[in-house]
Image (tube, rainbow, N blue to C red; front, top):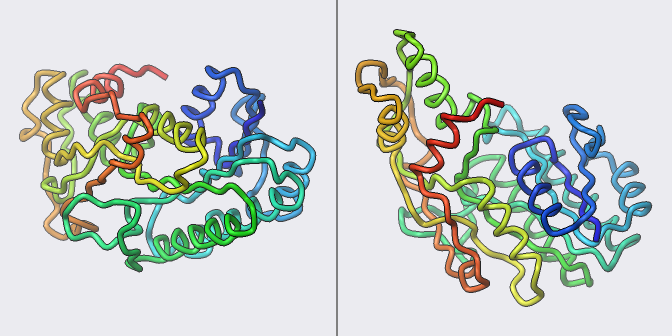
Length: 295
């Protein structure tokens, strides 16, 4: 069995490739950033001819669209439209024309839904809070349309998840890397926003197992993917600094000008749970994984 991963250079691409290989699959990846290893090709999912040629030649059983820009800001309007929107239509049309037996996974986000603070499920109402959310919604409607014309297209709405492969643009890794330096003697001050924000802290490897669970069956085509276990950024500080036996309050300064996207974001993963998947890595285990990583 062959798997083709667009957006293979990120954390999800890495763990998804590992999970596919454990199942005996032949894996190829595409990244627009760089060829990080022999299995990743340099390419752009927004390039229609490139995507069509790759799918026509390889005819993979599974195609995963993970490519996106790691920001929800309006400044990335065109980049997100290209990677998420154009990328989705390129993949789905190429599969329809050249590899109709393929299953396609389209990445969604918990940010797409109206957030009232309660657990979010895949049947909740879409929102339009950013250009990122708008193009994610567009990609879902494309997946639904192509499903109606015979493409087996799946959507997994991913909630916050982390791993040692995160960049320091993400608050979880920013805290971990500062804690490492502080453990070695640094007296730096870590600037953070609202540390009362609550979200899920799921391990990316668990999330990719959920993705494979979803595409491994033919009855459910959309599902929210998350742990339903929410913690604040302050909780994460307690976990990480507890491991280095330091009081984070000595090293953290909160910005009064920071405005969070939401006070809480939590999933209701009942549908994916009903298919047999459950998150298995706790926030404490995740903190240890990220703090001890030497890659």
